[in-house]
Image (cartoon, rainbow, N blue to C red; front, side, top):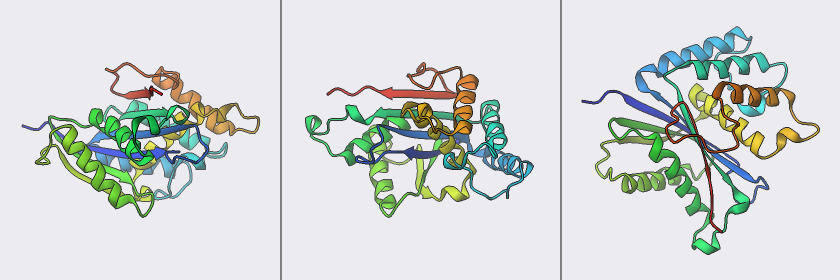
Length: 237
């Protein structure tokens, strides 16, 4: 008997090969399906409390000192809600050597996504995976990822991975929350937080996540960590 149905919301930051960003971050925010509506409603209430439309998109790039109290409360909400869990994989793209492994950047991208999701998926229950719709390649990305996961966890009949689909982040509070978390991790590891003209509000959010999680966001967490799990991929050259 299945205990629950798990929803997994995935987002990515600086994953392109030649975007001049040295760290890519892929993140997955998980919750049981029965809690989704209540969580979304709570996030909308937080938005209204801070004077913005409940359907307005929240995201890392919009953080400012004026809006800091909103994002501060969202971070507290994530860490205080036992239904929400997060996992991210961080890759130093300067370590990538596709030639040595006879792979394209596209192939490597799916390898990282597989590593992210194989531990996010509950093999005892049904899983519904939602990816942020980025570009015209999104449909192809879905098919390729579905194939990798089916083969990787031997789920050929789709007993565990019931659905993988693209959704618009503007319509999903959970994707938006995932974007904020991966944004903070990338901001710290890419060194943006050290720049002279860096965003003070973003620095405060990074430090808040460090405090709430108990991790410095610059190294792999314990494998058993369920709430806020980070994996820094070490690549052989």
